[in-house]
Length: 142
Image: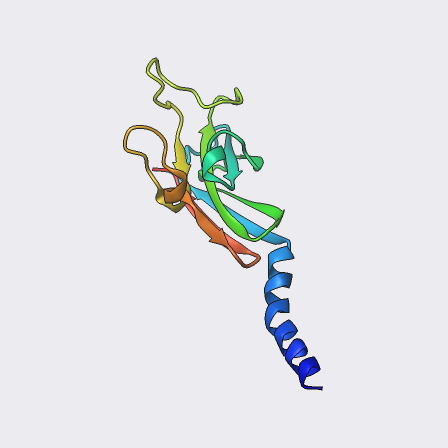
């Protein structure tokens, strides 16, 4: 009887963690500070440093409103560490436009207001943990 009680107690301690790990979560993202009414926001979600800015887990494109904002949601995500890279595709050509040395000419931003010194922000600076559904990440274009 004692063994059954111990096993049941252990299961009750571990089970909530297992259920949370397998849950499908929703991540909400608010975007502010874009050029009003121009093009669309392109929002990329990444889940690892080695694939940062190379292999997007999910991408959402949404028109920029007349007040330069938008709200999106990434649904059915497992709990984990993520980072967001976003830009405003003002001319709707499907890519971020750069000048002759590769500096972006269109507005861009990262989660956690991360900035790179000479180049894009690092994954570790933009990373955040998604542990509960309906968490919101706010991104403001500089």
